[in-house]
Length: 109
Image (cartoon, rainbow, N blue to C red; front, side, top):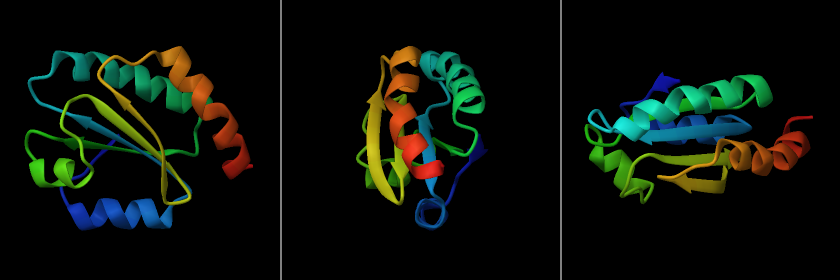
């Protein structure tokens, strides 16, 4: 995942790419650190065309608040510049993959 530190850049990426995943995490968040490799693996294996970005919410609070993210980890998936799905805290990887399959196939094929 690419690290994002600039609010304008993330909006530019969302606007210019077909599929974007933003992973909001924190430096001291053990759940965030444990979940991140699982999400990265799921994306690489199932949805290779989704661009992934990480925002450290504790360091870049203004970016997190602009996306209405108030707890971590939070994952937001965008298709065609529109928010498709938002996942928070307790995330089932199997459900995550299952819910993204159909829109991914529609937008990316």
